[in-house]
Length: 297
Ligand SMILES: C[S@@+](CC[C@H](N)C(=O)[O-])C[C@H]1O[C@@H](n2cnc3c(N)ncnc32)[C@H](O)[C@@H]1O
Image 1 (cartoon, helix red, strand yellow):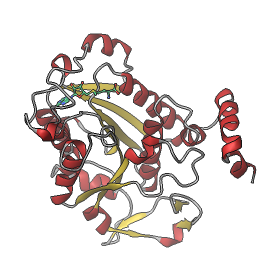
Image 2: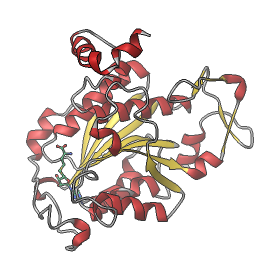
Image 3: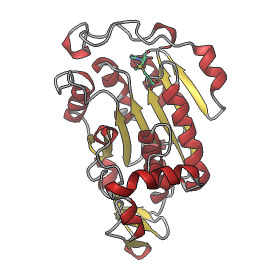
């Protein structure tokens, strides 16, 4: 009751101001937007919860498009906070072209020459590296080349959250390979954030929205809006919420069956399956580890 009242418009600003000044759980920080980039904390927390639901104890999270690193540092902080409370280890990766900034791209309307210019956002790599902790690794180079190599040679835990802030349709299209690569390692439902989809110039025939449309025309991982993300939030009108999406691995979902004996249904929660003990099984009856065994093949 008190919780519901606190979220009402006359009280919510005061409630947030109080919560900012007291130690609260990472869940409360995500709900009340008490972190630097709430979209990152909300995404990483949801990814960690999804991992736990599947009995997975380590994930990685990624930011595509790092530039000066403000976002990557916020992602690193979110990962550390969620790891401390959720009991899931979290590695952080930042993908960027480095000092050369935005690549030339397609040269037509799809990459918004009305908005971006090749060479925008050059990165000072050494300066940023000095600020990062060992949790975080920079993957430098054009994502058209680095993403496949990352999946094949570097990635050792399933992707649990990704932010796309590469600005260009062509770069986003290439980066989405992390979700569709034949050797992909991803959670069954991966929370995503797309930064450039809600400005006046954005439409589904260019930019990140076109990259999502084309991605969904191929393969059996589909990206859709994160329906219901606004539910029960004290500030449901916040613009970042409409930029949150989820990638669903349809084949992996088909391969699952639940053991109801171990699952309590909580229909009031935004995530209705609250497990008492993680127990998802393959249809052939072998228990546990479905994601990791599939992804390691
Ligand atoms: C808007 S900036 C990112 C800002 C950053 N997320 C932040 O919050 O501070 C976009 C970045 O995407 C990178 N980028 C765009 N296309 C790329 C590509 N094909 N490969 C690698 N990096 C790319 C650029 O180098 C640039 O640094």
